[in-house]
Every structure is written in C-alpha cells, then in structure tokens.
Amino acid sequence: MVWVGRVLILRSPLIQMGPAKDKIAIGRIFHVVDDDLYIDFGGKFHCVCRRPEVDGKKYQRGSRVRLRLLDLELTSRFLGATTDTTLLEADAVLLGLMESKQTKQKE
Amino acid sequence: MAGNRLQRIGSVFSRTRDLLRIGVIKKPLWFDVYAAFPPLREPVYRVPRPRYGKVKDVIPPIFYREDQVRARFYRIYGSGPRPFDLSQLNYKSTCQRFVEKFNELKEEGKIEEEKLFEETGKALLASGIILQRRGTDRVAQEDHQDVGSRDSVRHLQLQTLLEEMQEGKKDQKEQTPERVETQKENPLPS
Image 1: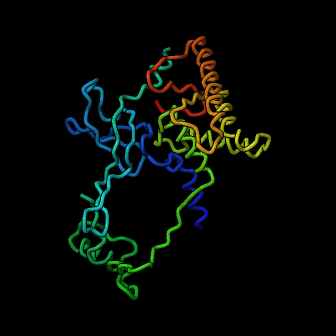
Image 2: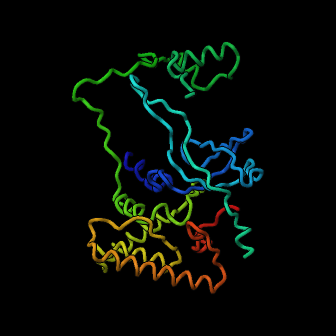
Image 3: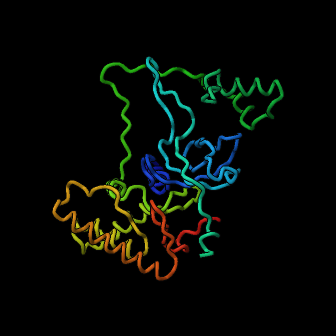
C-alpha cells in the first residue's frame, strides 16, 4: 500500500516539478480585492500578488498569468515555538499575462 | 490566520452532537452508530509527548531514481522553456519528458553513461524542444569537454532556430524562447 502511494506521488506533476524555487508556472486568478490578485497555480496554497502597473485592467478573475515561484508555503519558526507558523500562502513573482493560444495561432 | 483549530476542542462526536442540538447540520449517518457503540477512548486531542535525547522520528526521505536526472536538468537548464501548468491532470513538463527520454536511452543501452545526458538533450532538440543552457555543467564531468559540448548544443539550437524562422513561426523574446513543441501532445485549454 505504501508502494501505491509512492507511485501516485511519482506520477504527479507537482512532485515532478521538484523544489519550487525559481520555477516558471502558469496560474489563474480566482479572486481580486482592489489591487491584490489571488492566484492559484496548482500547488497546496495560492499566492497573492499586487496588480502591476502595466496592463493593470487586464488582470481580472479567470485570467491566466505567468509566475516565478519562490516558495510553496511561507513558514517560519518563531523563537521559543515548538512548531512553525504558517501563512497558508505561497510566494511568487508575477511576470505577466499568459499569451493565449489565439494570439499565437494568428501568426 | 491558520484556520481550522477545531480538531483540538473535544472530540468529533461532541462537536457533532452540539452542532446537531443547535440545528446547524443534519444528522450524519455514523452518529447513531457511534452513540450506540462508542470507542474505548474518546478521541480527544492529546499533545504528543515531547521526545528527549537521541530519539528521533524516523521518516525516510522519498527519493526516486529520476531525481538525480531531474536535479541535473534543473541545474543546467534552469526552469525549462515551458512554464508549468499544474492545473492539467496529466501534465508533462519538459523535465519529465527529459527524464523519460533519458530512461528510454538508458534502457536501449547503446550510449555510454557520460554521454547519456547530452544525447538526451540532442534527442529533445531533434523533437523540437529547445533547451537553453543556464548553469554550468556538472563538476563530475570532464572539464575540457565542457566548452565543446556547449558549443555543439548551441549550434544545434541555432540550426533549429533558423529552421523555425524560415517556417515563419518564430517570435523572438528576450528571456526564454517560445515553446515550440507540437501542440497535439499537450493541448492547453485556451
């Protein structure tokens, strides 16, 4: 049974990605609060990015964006604590909007 | 902050019973069964006993044989030409293709160990996936071959680039090149 779980993880694209540092991923914005964009890229947690100045209005709910992942989960341990404190958020840098297939097929 | 601490208050049964009394949830299927046959110990959360001295929790790390190939791939080629789209269920990243090609070539057995990595890179270039070198090659490899192999790979890259420019598909970007692989292999939802 342990073997089955191991194989399931082996086949999963998240594990095949490996450590998330500096990996380019595609995310989807699922919530917008003024200038904050909540982006889900398929990891355990979502990330929150600030709306960029360039093409600011194009970032709406459902837009696909390119991200550079920095951390899958922001955690750290405070002095004297027994367990880490987690923010339940991932960390990523917003690179820009995802070039859709339609724009590519026009070429 | 971190949401659900509710598992530490009482047990599942006491929480469900109280919620039922208020009228917030409807009665779950297991409720009467549990009430009739409760367990010996009520499942209240208990803080695990702290371990002292040399006693350590033995959790073996999960390593796969492909991890070595993957580590090398990421060290040399960086993140890969295509961004990871994890929303798809059977997504195959460039690294995964590399690993599969590597295993195929290894099973064939015709190429020797040191050349295997470069051959996989060339095989991927032949199928249309351009890999841009970002890091230095592995220290374990011979250093004098490093310059030669890098030039040959770059030459191959330039060749495929030229072919695509003639076909009229190329769109030059500053950082990473556009993904060139056949779309039928991985149809992205538009």
